[in-house]
Length: 545
Image (cartoon, rainbow, N blue to C red; front, top):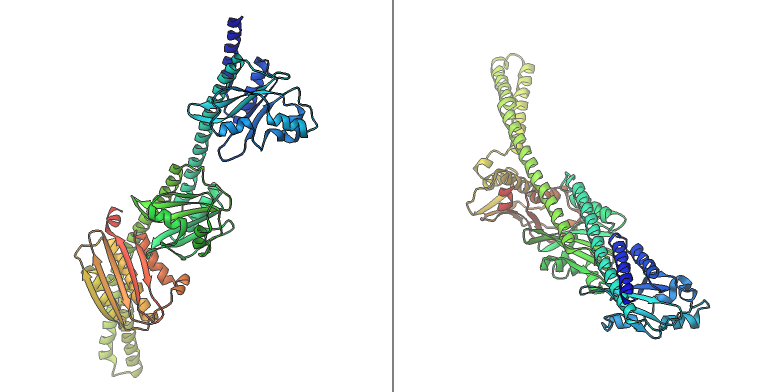
């Protein structure tokens, strides 16, 4: 008799195993295994709790519950704990056991009008796979008060199969979720790569990332001037740019991610973590993730994602978050390389135009001036009108020659071949500025970098001439093995830091040129104080690009 029962048990376990191995939907699997369990045994009722250490018990599946237990969407089976769930949470329940008096059944009998279906006792067994525990399998039979060792052993075997299936399905779900995440990541990076204007990249990046992952609030910070500067922010309704600066010493989770050079995830933020960011115009949040943007092992910015919901970013894999940051950094660097190539192409085109103007137009205007002067000497004394016309022609020719020289200078500054610092000094002196120039280091600069610094210096000198109310400029060029720094200072009237929020096109142009070369641009000024602009470009990045 025992052999026949054993054979039936093995057949039942085989059927259940085959069914479990064919399913990847958790809810369908749990209910199907209960149906099969009741079909191959004498049990009349079964239910499964999935238990998480942070939440109440969840009745994930149930079959043939009597009306007293099934009332109000299985209310008696959810919410408050019972002996078996509490023992499970305390790691006291390690095998299949008889539950002499189930508090849920007692509660249903006392407070629900429905029928208990003859249930008074049940058996319970933990769902495990290796060292992992997932919940409880419960089985009951009308009028049955005691479950035999054989029945408990069968439930133990079934529970192990269910636990193994739960682990497999959860791994499958994680892989499926990760595959979807990385597919979305590929799509969003493709969209970001399609952005061709580096000044628009921060804005477009936060827009595309928000749309792809349905993240409500995203901010992009870049490190500069010893602070984290807010470049772009999406608040769930609109995208805006700004140059708000966050103090690295009191910047909440953003500063933590930058200084610690690691992903920082906050499930339930405290007020002290929120205030530094809301003070800069970001919306209040409850959960957040701060992803460091890194070049090699060095952080240079932070991608900050936040939400008003608790724990929204807890379940994103760290590898995915870091991959998002790395791909965004790569997109920025790629666009900077493209911008460098464009700048080189523009420089070569300006050189060609300057050469053509000098070799063709300048020579013709000079010839026209020479002819006018010769004609004046021959015909000037014979006819006053002709003499006056020739004089005007010669004068206009000289003015045009002067304008052409200035245009050629702007297209390709004569003297840049003698070095950046002499060219800037000459340019400033042409604007009647007293220029004090100082150089440190002898390293030869790449052509595109020298041209970019020339344009930054040119704009800086123009600003001194137009806005500083100063007649002198102090230029310092420092070259080292790792970077080159151009610093221009004036002792004029200065301006307040608040005025930086509405930066002029000239300031934006200087900043964008520095960033296109992989560097940073810094402005220091106060009302009534000196103004210093500084562009620092890493030489290794430039030469590698």
